[in-house]
Amino acid sequence: MAIERIPVSKLRLGMYVSRLDRPWRETPFLFQGFYVEDADELNALRRLCRHVYIVAADERPVQRPSAEGIDVAELDIDDVLELQMQDAMAESDVPFVEEVDSAKKYHADLTEFARDAWSGVQQGRIMDADTVRESVGVMVDSISRNPDAFVWLARVKDYDSYTYAHAVNVAAWCTLFGRRLGFPTKSLEDLAAGGLFLDIGNIKLPKQVLEKSGRLTDEEWQLVKTHVGHSVDLLRATEGIPDSIVEMVGAHHERYDGSGYPRGLEGDEIPLYGQIAGIVDFYVSVTFPRPAGKAVSSDFALNVLFKQRNVFFKSELVAQFIRVIGLYPAGSLVELSTGEVAVVLCQHPTRRLRPRVMLVLDPEKKPYDSYPIVDLVKETEDRHGRPLAIRRGVRDGEYRIDFSRLPF
Image (cartoon, rainbow, N blue to C red; front, side, top):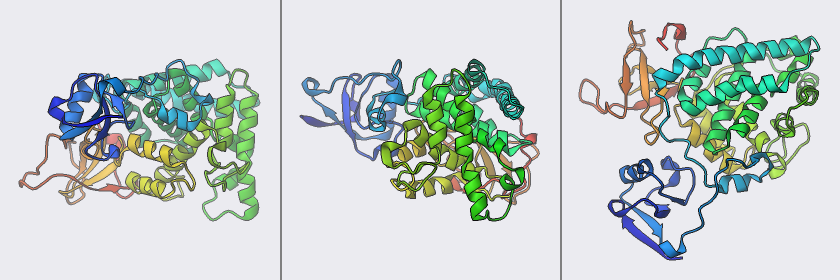
């Protein structure tokens, strides 16, 4: 195959880029090797690179298909990662400030739906699959318009129950992860529904065991692990729930090295949705733990995930998840080089380390009366002329921040 190195000034629409002059993980492009199809991609390459490597016109590969219309749950994971799908890090269709008001209602509605579903199952009622899909569908639509708005709410919302908070957060991140992989709408709805009901089997377990703050006994741990089977049984009793969702829920505690439960599946024996759910469930559990637990910052959690590649989770999926999350996702707390603490509003599609943030604490860690918004892409220096950047991630609970006072 004839490969030619060219300066990005000579790059044109329709050319096939096979290599960049920097690692792919430092860019917003999902797949190594792609056609330059629109002006946004062309401009992003010109901003990020000095030169690229293209394939001669007569040797370019056949354009890979879109995932739309494909049952991705039936594909091997490697096949999914090979599909040429839409770049999920493109600019959002709707600005954050426009979508966040709508997202508040969708978020509240989905939380209430989860509460009603749990209560109904406890009372012996069977869930309705169409209602499930309709309820998660509005969240999927919102995330498709602007992923940061719903994720922001999932992070800063004050919940009265960990159970529903965890369920909604997992559903949101599963949706966002699937969007990163280019899944079609139906698959995103399946992922969201599976995420929402990963742990519904916990209603069969003693409350004192689930809420225990200390270390579980061996007997209690074995009891806790049975929640997976209970969840699967409850979903199987719901007519119209796809097998892929049931498999996702049944496999979200399996691990790549075979150390998980309940079946001890190994490697790609674990279904795709189950692997996605496992990564998301881990991330949400450590960044937004039970009340007795201690949260870690998002960047710390991603560092742990990175070290678990091909141990607990498939390396390629971990890499994609880290790219969709970014070190500082919407709703996460960061400390700036000025000492100020801010909450991330939304990420920049190509400058992931310089998001748009809202200042909440001054350099002495005292609350601001108003909440200035800073776009770190545009504002690169502080008021003293020194470089302005994020110094570190801040874990939830490190400072007493009243999120209910925030304007969004």
